[in-house]
Image (cartoon, rainbow, N blue to C red; front, side):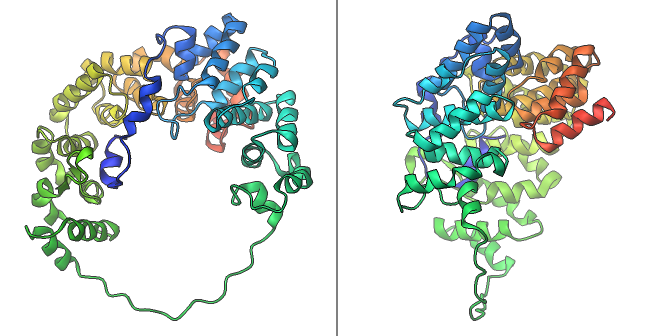
Length: 425
């Protein structure tokens, strides 16, 4: 469940949901724009039926942020493929760079880099020209270095150095700059060895039991235990008290280390997790549901289903993937989950979680997912494409798609290998 990671982290940052407010409204999922916004394979088939409208939908998604989580949701390769298959000219894409803010420029440049990688010569030339003369030239160089072979950008070094004018690169660790710097000098020998005495496990557990321990002491003790090998079932009776309300605007949440310690306990945590899962405190119920999703039995399915239904009802797009993975373990025994999972698969803008919904639907209703698997061969998420490569039903179009994926320089090694294996070569 992706939403529990923040609780475990303990990082005091702004509310992550605030960033979604500006683009929380999406077009209906069964429309061209709505499918492209979500990165679904459906967007590709609708775009090919109306290539001009398909290209415009991609441009619309480049002008504004349509990913629910821009750190995890994949779109650049998807947008590049749509532009390529729609035979869209590159000039309207380049126009988006004029006066663009950093976020827009990054979306456009990454899409151009992917487009060039899959054979868009005009995109390749435009990116190289942008390094020489464009406003966001260092970002363009970074994407070239990340995605293209060295021989495709190595000759840009004089232009890059000229534009730097003796200053330091904005991102000196980008691949191109590291390549041009050459091997880093070896570090000198180690300094004098210092012995560090860490408290024993028993002492750390005593801190956790101490009702007068300060939040900082508790956090340090939990963090140290979480970093050590082994399991600590002694912590289970204390879990309900290991939380904080500082700062208040973040609400009550688990202290850092709690989720890691509990998850390592695996099945040992199932019994208390059944009580946690119905607690009124969201951090504790989330922890309980996570344990039950990973290690519970089919008797725990009603709790998981109820939470999945609640999240669907309120449009909570982040965190349902862990519930889906848990329900998938029970297969057809939880067939009543299928409509909820199908709705999530169709509608979620948080595409990172869509592969979990696909896997769960395939496990729960194996005879009812052929169309979903076929569509997922063109999904924006590489994990969805990989699952579809392995499980999509045989067809003539499948063989053609597998060959394209096998030979695509934009796909990762695992996906290309899976496509080759499915083809038998």
